[in-house]
Length: 548
Image 1 (cartoon, rainbow, N blue to C red):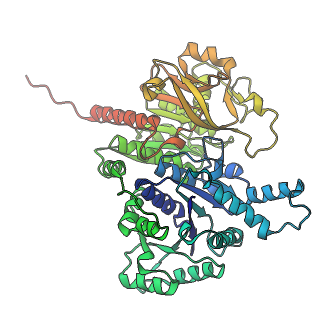
Image 2 (cartoon, one colour):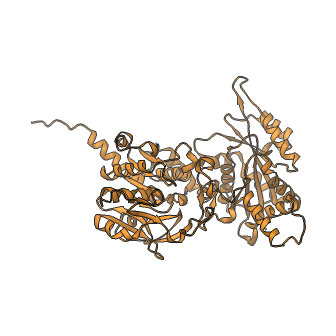
Image 3 (cartoon, rainbow, N blue to C red):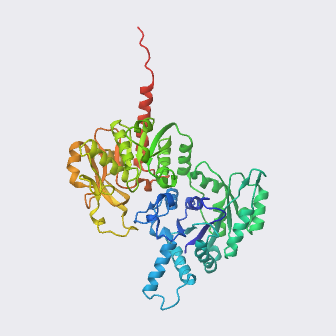
């Protein structure tokens, strides 16, 4: 039977429950235990798929096609194991399930209530991953902050499980903030005390309190928190601000978080932590030998969480190349033919990011043209690949009004068109081409050199595709369809013959990049950017005067 750990948060949002959950899971995994993490979100949306990136950051997609919270990306990047539909549940999905059951008569005419029907469905979802002896430990992150009205049913479900499960099969980790008041020059524990009291009033008592802080906690402060919050002093864990999220597992190891958990859950016979790959990654990350500047051309650059997986993939690829990747955000809405050179000329490579809608697409097309004509390393993802296709049609094929039917339904040259199976779709949520699909990679191409295999599987999230009616024109003009879906001939990868590094992909490779397995497309983009930067630096050096 699996054991269950719950991670709750107090005082304020954005403390990093997902990172703490992922770090604890990594430490337990490193000791030989089978661990998974799930996220319960208290909003009424059925999933984040219809949410604007400004609202909720990126939408993370799993292999089985679930549109999920971005924290699942952290889980996968830390554990190097895929998540699924079962790893992310929202209030909307819970209520939808219960209402559907009521409509079908499953409750036999009873009055359907939050307790027990909603809480029973929450508990069923929590325990779903623990069935079948697949995992030793299931960690559940409860979204939101203790005290939020929308979180109450989830906290109540946790309270009931605390009563139903054996004491050694249940544990609560509560993450709080210890603020520092500059005027008083003191760390203040009162917010944490109030947060724990609020949680206790709902019937849930934390076993471990993890304290986010900008300054080290003294033993006196830890004892004070332990005394007022009814935990052992060694169960008060310091989580001081780190230089990178990837240092947090080592911080938690130093604090003994995993050992406290193992003792409370009465798990014996565990191995010493095996973190050699993790330490090697951190060593490379912290000791780069070179530096490149890569432009992220996007329309949501004001909110970094909108491109979270892309930014993390660059960290992984940078470490692999022992190169510090400095991301330069360039808002595509403000790129024009007149200013594109001034905005991009100092960069060593470009990534044109995914997105939806017409805003900022002309700026993306300008950026693609600049990279193509100046032989700058270019990588386009999803919409970024589609913009590369449009730019090539306009400026190489001579189809001046070429566009995507997403932005211009009346374009005479719809080089990007709505997928046939999408034409009858009316509902927006969960109806895109989602999840992992196979792709056949053409031998002898840049894509083949990058992947070094002929069959790959990547995750998708789109409705529009390359229009194969124009395929012959592109091939004759030098754009190669180097990757296709074997089932329907959908073009998945495009590249250009006479360019050092120019590639666009319809899928989202950033979703599969992890610490232990950096994605090869990002690794090779960084390598190409290094080569481009070295070439620029060499050209910039003054020539020595010839001597007689």
